[in-house]
Length: 210
Length: 210
Image 1 (tube, chains in turn brown, yellow):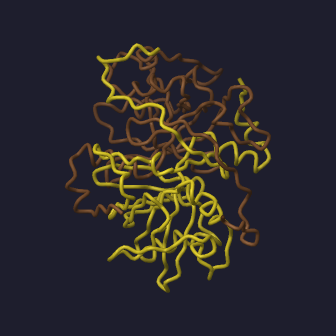
Image 2 (image 1 turned 135 degrees about the vertical axis):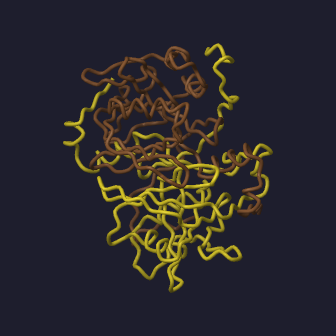
């Protein structure tokens, strides 16, 4: 077993530590967040920190890094209150990755990375046409995390869009059928294949654990 | 395209809505959180809401559901300030799933689900011996989310333990080599296979996007 204590962790070279700490939490979801500002300029950015907060009300969170020179996603959400979260499929994984480049302020990542803006009636923020699983959200609250100047951004689901055939009878979305990917660290992408589905766990009905 | 608006979402049968909203955010990490109370009683619980907050300082968050009859993880963390987060591999995925059953208060999920407690010198909370990728954390802060009575629990990494051969030269953990799994919804498990690794994205070095 390789043990890394706090002292060794703090002494690690900066990028090595970033890779280690970004991969220690496991496989992460990869989501494109689409926003627009009051002048109609769109923005698209890749996040791996989207997290389920609750089903009723249907709330989704994501972690916004310290807002400095970049931070268009955050500013646009605060400005008009709506945004989209779009799953990344194998088909668009490379284009999604490159939305993380620093483009000039007047360049939209949609056009730079050849992804298509799509709008739903009555919803101001842009969806990613190529994404098979997406949702529109209304900004609810931001919670500032003082320890590292990040923010938990909370949104309420207003609208869900799925390609036909992806919604199972029990409500689950067939993410594998949609070729949705996951990410580890900052740059490595994975295609998850289904290996098991277990029933609701009951203490008096445990399997033999072979 | 199948569209579900807010009205339809709110009218969905409870379990169907839970499945839909639990799978809309994409593939999630699956982590076993190990804790102990002041009487020495251990607890182990499966979470799919662990999220990376930052690399320097190395902070990890997870979402704690409303604390009621259950909530031993939360109470133990508040009580003694330390906990472990253990990645789930294909080898222990079934045992990990069943830690979510409601056991009697005096029963530890470790013994009920045939997982082995392991302790690191000077660290009070129990690790899962069978997990190939794990960390020990010190509780830093809890942030209450008033909209649904959940909490963001923030911890600082104190200790990392990895099976030999899993730490790449660049600091990334080889999660696929460790057979780490991901989860969709509440009960479906996936084995991610690597499909791509892209360089740090630069706006003036975009690929042709074929």
